[in-house]
Amino acid sequence: MTLLATWSDSAPDELLVSTTDPTEIAAELATVGIAFDQWPTGADLAVGASQDDVFAAYRAEVDSLVADHGFTVIDVAQIHPSDDPGWLETATGARGKFLEEHTHAEDEVRFFVQGAGVFYLHIDGRVLALYCEAGDLVSVPALTTHWFDMGTRPDFTAIRFFKNADGWVGSFTGNPIAKSYSDFDTLAALRG
Image (cartoon, rainbow, N blue to C red; front, side, top):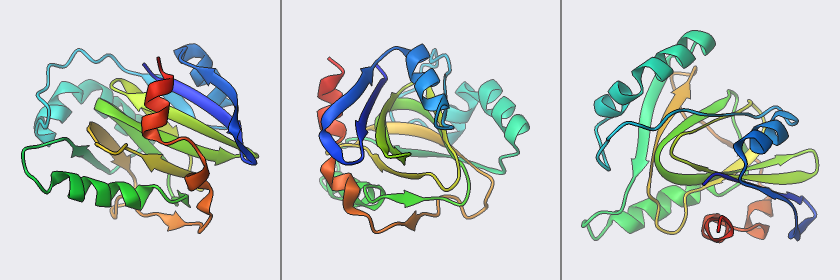
């Protein structure tokens, strides 16, 4: 279940808003320029499915988004638990990169195919945490300060959309704010 939680950026212990209603989530995010939508998730994909299989399952939706917004690079990012003893160390390293507040020169657009992740948006004196799961599409406008958490045991597949051929390029703010707010695992528990 998708969750939106909101705090003041000066009071990380005082939850202001918490909702799992998709209509309320979309409306609240729209007030700060974040686009949120949900696509059907009827695709029967194995965990760790190939990029080609993921694209095939969502071809119509992906093609429509590309046509509407002019994306030139589309890929699939995924991290899943595995029998490889080094998977968690690799995943933890990847997680650390995204846990620092940053911006991008272009919109950050993600569609969650499997699993979950949390976008933390630092906007207008607030921190909005959007716990995304399968079916959620989010578009974070360029230059929006944010960070992303995939949890202590990352498990997700997401389609990423870019206009820049370099793909994911972050500009880190140096602000340690991310360390003050509930992490992925705490928000997962809030969902009930």
